[in-house]
Length: 84
Image (cartoon, rainbow, N blue to C red; front, side, top):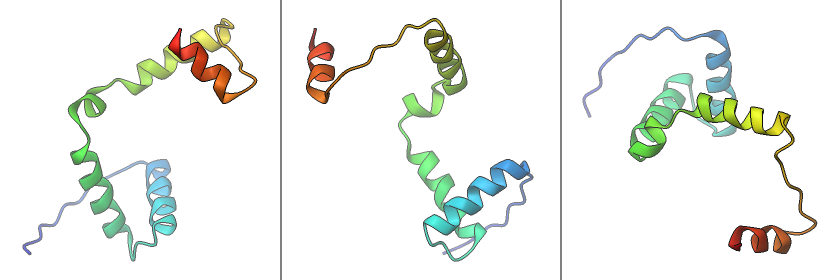
């Protein structure tokens, strides 16, 4: 298999997350972990690749801060509410 070399600069916090992933996935080195993460990201459906997660999280934070949440006593209650 042909291989190409790529040099990237990433923030320390992202590198730390890659290293955590490498260890948890038992990857032999950082390069293997990065290659797997990139391959996974490229296989995501377009909806997930293009979804604005930061915007959605900000909207969710506003809803939570405004008290627009619900609690359920059981999974059955939760599922029943979803079916309404």
